Image (cartoon, rainbow, N blue to C red; front, side):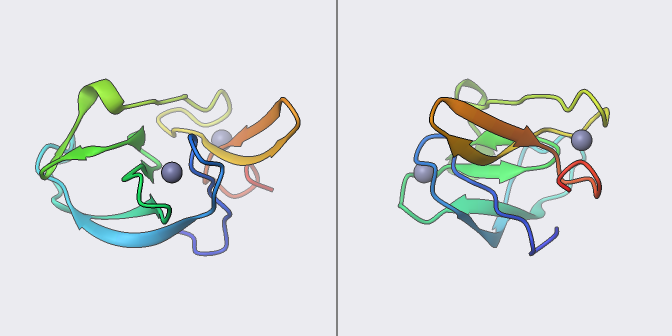
Amino acid sequence: MRPDLTVLCDQHLRPMKISVVFIENTPSGQNWNEVYVCDSGCGRKYHPQFGYFQLDGFRIQEASQSRRDCPRHSGQAQYLRSQTGENRDWVCTEAGCAG
Ligand SMILES: [Zn+2]
Ligand SMILES: [Zn+2]
């Protein structure tokens, strides 16, 4: 996970912090994952493979999942980098995409 990125919560537009969390139901089967977490206490998280999501216990809540696939990098979910007025800037974590 790249620490130099500014990943905004898709609900609060606040910068998220990297944290390591335990997730039971990842597609990869990997349980410990570095994810970005909203520090406003909303529980929103972002991971480049899952997009934005919330956990129910240790499981990704499918209803909460919001995933935008990057048109330039397949398999990568985009994150919200900035918002200017109504204009939201979505990129993925691949170098060059995030600029
Ligand atoms: Zn939030
Ligand atoms: Zn991309």
